[in-house]
Length: 238
Ligand SMILES: C[S@@+](CC[C@H](N)C(=O)[O-])C[C@H]1O[C@@H](n2cnc3c(N)ncnc32)[C@H](O)[C@@H]1O
Image (tube, rainbow, N blue to C red; front, side):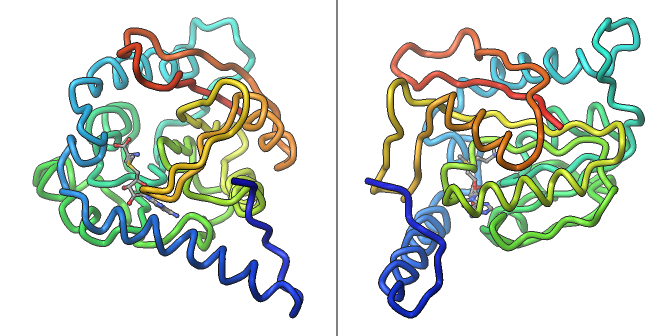
């Protein structure tokens, strides 16, 4: 399936309808999934530890003062978890590295389960819960030390994704860094009709990052994942 255009001329009513359908289908899909780690990971909850462990060392390489990289996350005050679900990443990664975390997700039922899942004490450090699609989310300018976006970008059209990343660029503090962690297809993008999502290639993500006016700092393949799953890759950029 080809990318759905975001053009809005009258002759493109059909395309607009397709785009609305594209978003509604994934919203309906997620509204029916259980608010659990297994629900977030499509039945693969056992990959969560390997996922978080590698994310911790990848993120840590930008926090460690001994790193030779010129890119350091200046402060560790505030991160935002985009497509956060019930807060699996917020709880196990972001709250361990940042004082406060904001969460944004389109599925209300996941956001309302977050406090329960994260726990009473730690959820006091959730600075804000946003129930919103990323395609409609306008983060505040110069606010975040870290923007983490994982396993959600397949639900956005290319042009909505480029626009969202442009807003992320503005939302970073001067020393802030943006992270994407996504499934990758090998040769060409794939479309999954069940949850209305694209699996893009690595090159497509790199092109999208550049189109948004940002540059890639580092990327790394996820290790120790089951062979039957897509390649998963971390990207750091700003
Ligand atoms: C595979 S889960 C990943 C959740 C979380 N990132 C994690 O790794 O545990 C996908 C999440 O994306 C959310 N989602 C789907 N479409 C979205 C959109 N357009 N904007 C924001 N969130 C969306 C779903 O509600 C769900 O919480």
